[in-house]
Image 1 (cartoon, one colour):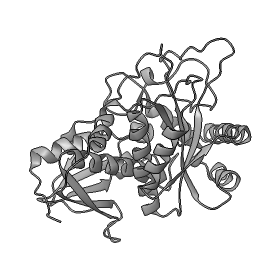
Image 2 (cartoon, rainbow, N blue to C red; image 1 turned 30 degrees about the vertical axis):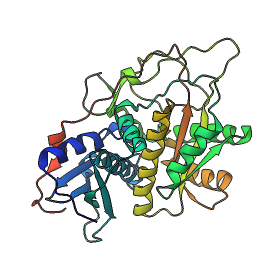
Image 3 (cartoon, rainbow, N blue to C red; image 1 turned 30 degrees about the horizontal axis):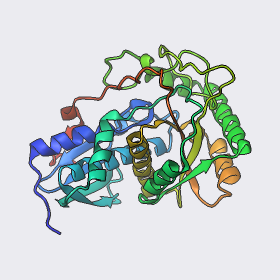
Image 4 (cartoon, rainbow, N blue to C red; image 1 turned 120 degrees about the vertical axis):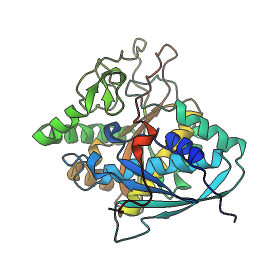
Length: 332
């Protein structure tokens, strides 16, 4: 396996695509360093959300999504990647060291890379069109390749249980002043904001099959369904065998893989982390839906946007240079 040399221009372009990854409240809690033949991913504690994410689960999951986006972008540029996750226990903020090597992307690899720019979180109701089982199987396989499992919750009892748990988590966080103010501070942003959740990406009308987190500002027109139609969301639960920091990082990689594959199919997606941020509801999800056999990491809504739906605006990202540190800075 021949290690690939990274010129800085190529590395910055690849990191720019990696920065399109989804993150909790669009906080983008990561930083990068570029070596001659490596790229390093760090958690950024200055962008953490301590009220809703005191253990750093959402932060590591967000960084895992950026890590997978980086791998996808590298492969599209003709480079595979050997990834060392949490390579140094003495530096827990150093989440991954990525060593590129020469590789050749397939047409499928290039299609997944193109999905990076097209992916959006769509919080609106979805149409009643069914998602083909064959598509869901491919999406599940994408999660499995990253060491995670994606369970489709297709029984009405499971869907009702999830909706109740999401509501319970919302109430718990609403009663926690720091959590409410933290979410408010990261939302209600203008359309041109480089971080946070813009009002233009939050539906103004009532929710669908799954309750939505309350954000400050809500200006997005809700999708209109026909008479007697209901939100056709497919509920899915992404889980990992364990719950170590490495598991959480890989859960983020699996989330990215699922979202990009679904986007490639033209599906709308919406990651839902709120019920995983409250210990009681997270435990209930594990016991009631996974029988305690795996650790739930994030819920997903998957479906079709109605043909009449307006495109979801792209959320902003920080300038790529603001996310890159010099390689010789102290590691913590």
